[in-house]
Length: 162
Image (cartoon, rainbow, N blue to C red; front, side):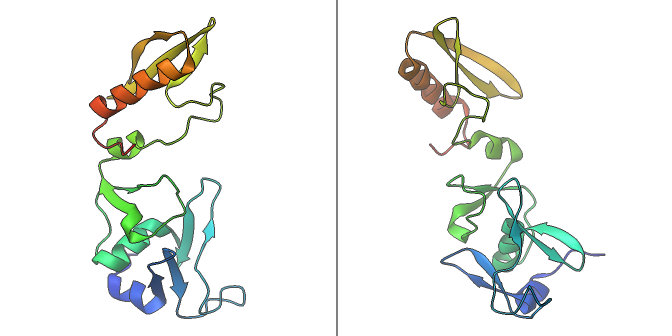
């Protein structure tokens, strides 16, 4: 089965630039009528749409709908919201850049600060570069560690936006 074309996408969906949603032009089923947004949000926060039995991430479909081709690289949600598929919020970037555009710490980070963890009463700042962790130092306060992380992020992550 070949990749879906822009013409097929445009026959199946209208794109709403204000919401970033693909709106069904044709009813697919009773619970998927024409005029309704296509797809559902998966556990990872991405909108997923099934076309001819194949699952597609909606941001990749939006890209193809608007630009006439599927992206060759990763699609980054600039604002970090995986369900915000407005075309101005999407950019095609190398996978490494997409990974650098993190906005929030992982769920198991007890400090709640990106790039900072606590160790023996001090706050350690670390950043990932080229698949390896880079130690940035130990600091007395979480704010000092966060500032060190932000400085390193600007210097070492060309794809990061904030």
